[in-house]
Image (tube, rainbow, N blue to C red):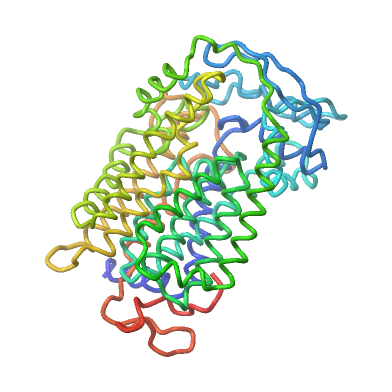
Amino acid sequence: MMITAVKSLADRLVASPRRLWLAAFAIFFALSASWSISTPTGASPDEHAHLVRAAAVARGQIDGREVMVPHVVGGIEGQFAETGVELPRIYQDVKDVNACYVFEPGISAACAPELKERPGTTLVTTAAGRYHPAYYLAVGWPSRLVHGEKAFYLMRLMSALICSALAASAVVSAAEWRRRSFTLLGTVTATTPMALFMFGVVNPSGPEIAAGILVWSAGLPMLMSPDPHLLNRRLARLGLGALVLISIRPLGLIWFCGALFFGLLLGRKGALRDVLRRRATWLWGVLALATAGWALAWSSSHPDNSVIDASDLTPVLAARKTFDNGLLYIKQMVGYFGWLDAQSPAATLVVWCGVVIALAMLALVYARFRDALAIGGVLIGIVVIPITAQALQSQLGMIWQGRYLLPFAVGLPIMCAAICHERMPWGGFAWRRLLVMFGFSLALVNAAAFLWALRRNAVGTEGPLLISPAHWAPYGGWAVWLVVYTLAALALGLFVAASDNRERPLPDSSGTAGGGAAEGPPRLAGAHAEA
């Protein structure tokens, strides 16, 4: 009875694009907001710099004067070019609030001093002052309405809202395939615990990853499973994802072009012609080109003038070290929290990588030549891109992190799931049961990763697993957010259990049967409604 009820609930959730988008948005926001509230202030990579940048942009300080600040990163001394802005004094305090426990995973966040609002303003520097202002304007405006530490949490929640909306749109795109359990599994797998962690903090990596998921999820069905009734909606999602991805940082243009290239490689004959005939394609293309031009102009006019003594790190040595760090980068893409000082449990890494490998192996078993070429190309890119980028920036030291590659790497599970959808026969094997096992296994290890991060902040990595007594606790208590996160993760896994409806098409918004054999795959009910 319970299994039947769960299946019925899943079917109702995916029956309408609007209902599915709202449900997916609520789930993603619950997941990312749990990270927002349960992560101590400043306990995520470079968040203090991004908080300062967001607050400054919200106050009209798009640019500031350059200030050379001495830093030691990875044992390398240098003068970092930062941007000076005038802000309330609490923004100066947040820069060092985590000094007692950052990079010390055995020490809880309880040692951090309390952040209090102080009168007056002061000069605050940020290493993010050269970054494109669009994201910071979108998340920084609450700091004008609320003061003190509450402003930091509100800015996090604004970032979580943006990322959740992008990810929910990706889920709707994945659900428009005929056998949507496979494609939904690909999108859920792409949304790693690390991605959700970045969704919930103030860092441009969050929307960059979410936009990458949306670009792959919307672009592939447009070319691999074309449907003229869905084309404009898919173009709108692809265009929106492209605008966000390109505007974050210059690498975004490479991530978008990579997704577009592999989509074209896998596309059906004639699909590109149909896309190019739509007026919406050219409209979104013009907007994307304008956004890319603005982003490149901003980047070229705001160079990094930092002076770092990394003369011993040659490009060849940097490339070799990056190759040797491959496993570390995989860990960082799956889940490596805090200032990269809080690992996920081994089960999270094993299960998540196991599902990705299983999707890749299944796709390769049934792949055609171009399918195999695309899978191999993405895998080569995942290995080669960090090596090339680090070699070209060797003068800055070993700065690469796994999350930098996630906007591109998310394409691997999404693409493999799409290939499985198109090529695999469904008779003679309990595919549904396997997919449900995958979905809920990911949900459980996702919750385990959240628990591990909570434990690190509450009692340190050497503390008790049950976090009792907690030395530090988020608003509402750690147990509340663990329950919220676990339920939301299970709800996300529930999407994979949604019915495929292979035998009869869903009605379209006019009430007629759509998507028969002569018209292509069935589409969601309400296909003409906005998602």
